[in-house]
Image 1 (cartoon, rainbow, N blue to C red):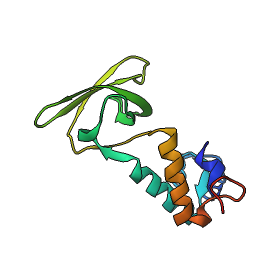
Image 2: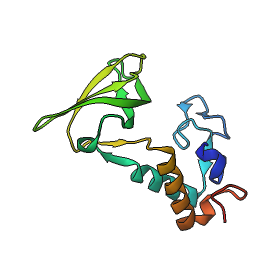
Image 3: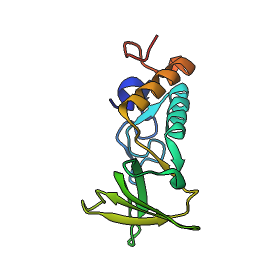
Image 4: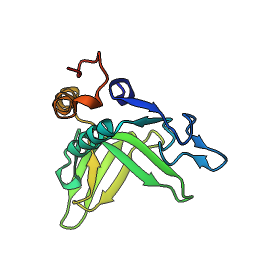
Length: 148
């Protein structure tokens, strides 16, 4: 289920829901998503992402993490990958993910305190969303399993 299906949102007022702002390119308000969330939904989303984030030093084989990066040409990429190997040394954490951006295996290294967003299990996400619905009742659309 997408966040836009369960959280209050409207067309982005800056780009009028196109994802592009005039001739400048991607809209910086909605980041090209075409939608803007209400204040309470924005707070609930932030809490969700914070709860699903943990330091790289706590990664275990099997975790699905959000990998973000910058290419040599300056482009950016972002994808979900499964951690397949973790090698911990004193200063650097090395981990292998599959699939990589190109579909192969990617080897990374980072500081152990670097944080990653985990996908978590379906049950984890459901439990977290239910607790957020109790804390931010106005964030969720009516007639969803999270509304009161």
